[in-house]
Image 1 (cartoon, rainbow, N blue to C red):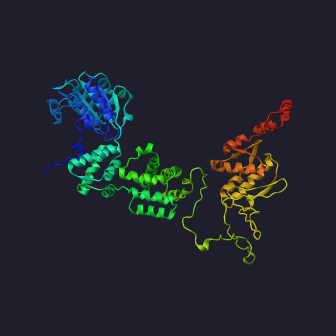
Image 2 (cartoon, one colour):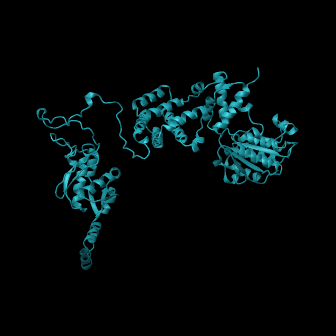
Image 3 (cartoon, helix red, strand yellow):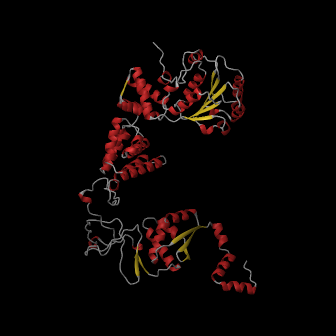
Length: 583
């Protein structure tokens, strides 16, 4: 029985023409060989498995070929090519810098540089993973790399270009190898399958190519794994099972459910995915990629960005026509936010479920007809309410059951936020935006208006001017309105006092970082509340953080006297006339 050779080694390119996905670089190297314009040092950099070391070996063999072909490729017939193919060439040396990274290893290499080539034109040194060399080894190598003998050529290969010293980069011609595209990988896998007599579905090969993420060596390794699993008949379902990849059909179904606003079915579908053993983070990443593919499918100019097989492209195109760009964009934002918060969330499943629930609510805005205003996003309930829940529960009051007010009948349309207004001479009714108050003129005659918080609405004189009195009154009312929902924050706000600093600005002094954080969080609500209270268009609040030790120094006697002089210049004249000194 013949020894098995993995596909990555068996089908390793032997000429520039067989290198996959690097046409620009191979053409440049061939032209340099034909015109005899060879540099003394090259740096091949790029991701793993894209052909860096392979191209270095082909380059070394070609420049030493004694009778190259008209297109510049090696002949594979001369003595130099034969010895290279049999791995016994004395003119080509490979050094693994990962395990030979010391100064002594570089000194041994420099000693070999002094020996001229035997039976060839050039002596080529291929240093793989060159970024692993130590700083001392790099410095010892600099002089030889800059001015080697005329018969020496260095080819450095690395996956981490940023770790190479700038002094090394400046002495080399740099070639950046790009990741191999999905289509090129699929074509090469199909070629290998036909050579070996295997059958493979195009969709399965596409899945393998996407799993390899631009690396041909990884793709061929996965291909060999699939051959062992299936016995040479590679199907899409077997690839899904072996590679532990979620079928794209789940994403198609989920988007259809979101377009129909079916929250319950979306959650059940996600539960099915979890029961199959897939991770929620990988699921949300796959959903984001699916939405991205749908977005690029909508425009023929961006259709080339869809890296899918021809049969799947039609399915993507059909679903993309049912989705408006606004829906896809908002859904992508939700997936991106979920992916960022997923790693830090303790309840990871809930994080994904919230994303799916919000996505199902986008159908009201994302698919609005062109030319019409987008309706407001209205979150629908996950489950339809039963008949017993169609009426709202009565508000808790201190009245006895016998005297309790009857239940109010449900209205046809209820606005989530209603602010009560009442006409009175020189009066305004002010309320927090987050407090729900029913308007008197729209309430039924046989029922009284419901006030969620009495502290949220009050009458004040319409001064239209920011004063310390109005400011303190408004500050206390704002804090009292928060008590039913956030007692701790309300107590913190009552512990500080605002101070007017200009006609439209007031200042609040915070004695701790916690109070400063609370004030900053509610800055917009406070400014809007104060502006409405005093009848102004715009009011600004500034926050000053004064620690206890700073406060003691700020309110010393000289400080207070100086502040008094600013408000009453006559005190400054008295201080000067009497020769006073405040200590």
